Length: 322
Image (cartoon, rainbow, N blue to C red; front, top):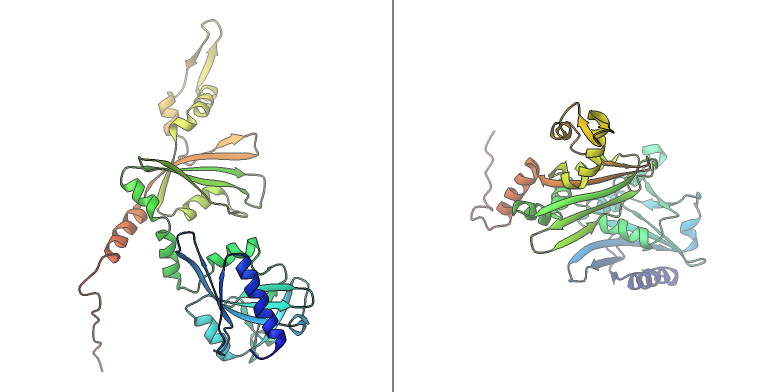
């Protein structure tokens, strides 16, 4: 990196990284379009994320400010191919030393666009002006960003929940407790797993919003390895009240409820296994017990297989033909 303005941008990014517990490593050799690497680890030293950064500093990079985004141009075929096929997730960081505006955008086939409506020779990226480099929201986004193939990403997603599957397989219990704000399209709510391995009970929260998606659709996507049924004990009081309303009448003289329809057991058997408790029409509360479905059982078998040394794993067939 040649000039003082560019050096200021790299130094600023390094400072922000240090303040937000990212390790920052400048790459002084010009390697097409990577100025630095940035790494984040957890308290045990396990790597959470490793990113490659293209850093551009100066007022000139903000001349095409469209309000919601800044247009970053001058990307050629070589850079496009390098960033979009890199094994590391790549981002561009734009820094304006005049007002310390520092924003970023991922560099991928989804964000990099061709000029002239797709017919031009160059490329450009729209960098959101509200995507501030390493603020709380960006930290969460960057920790989830990956350049891995889809099948690897999906496998890692299941791998992150393997311990829950194993606890169920070994006789422990995993419950899903959730409160959904049903009148808000924002998808706001609370979701947590309550995990009992037989020795202790731990809770794991999922601090995400799921806009325009009902939670009965969210749960199978968050935990695709699970079947869901209601916690009978948790729902018993509300189920009994509804049963009495629909299948009983109250005998004032005898001061007791008289069954005139289905038994309580028959009534409960007819109810939805993923039903919720209605709180004044505002909040839908769920308490569901998770069990392994076919995917969960298969994943544990496959994971056990790929986690052990296999003597012929390096063998490959020779293709023969004309």
